Amino acid sequence: MAEKIIWTGNSDTVPENVFHNVSAYAGNSVSGVIDEQQIVTWDFYFVHTSTNAPYTEGIVVDSARYFWQEGSTYKIVMTITDPLEAVAERFTIFSWRGETFDTDEFYSGLFFLEHEHDGERYFLISLDEGSPAPAFMSITPGSTNEFQMKVHISSDNTQGWLEILLNGEQVIFEDDSSRIYLKTYDGLKTNPVWSYGGVTGENTNLYMKDLKVYLLTE
Image 1 (cartoon, one colour):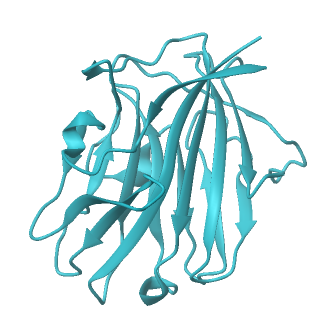
Image 2 (image 1 turned 60 degrees about the vertical axis):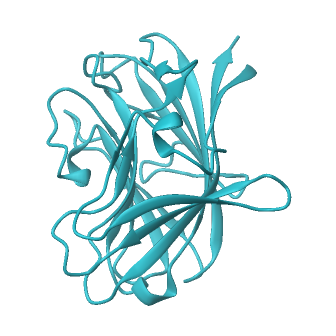
């Protein structure tokens, strides 16, 4: 497939210029820091006493909210550095959500990516009808890892699909396949959500960088 980049998270000033919606409560925050290579690292700061997590929802393209196109295929890229302070915690870092899901429950999306309790793996799971096979991905606690997710957009759970690469290696789902089929479009509110939710015990930071979205074509 040919690919064309349509969005990047490289803005260190106003998150609203990059994300459709940025939400933080009770001292939580989302901010960007730019390095010498002009790469922005997004800092998701979570205050452990808060009941709501910092998150960003959707993307902005040409100064307007981007609407995901049913029938199109996208590649979503992000590099995440695990917080050592939270390696024993389970938290959601990414979810794909639509019209029917609660914005305060990151684990209720069409699919979502979570850091597991033991700190040594991530898992991706879908609550879509038919319960597609989950994927489990081993990592080193505190390490930096690149995730690539290829998503074909469809409201039909036999036509929508998802593939994942972790650090350039194809992820195999529990059914021994490299692709699962599921519903990936749920109305105009279909959006990716980057978050740092579900951590307790300490104030911690989760860092993401190299956030990009590509449109894939044949």
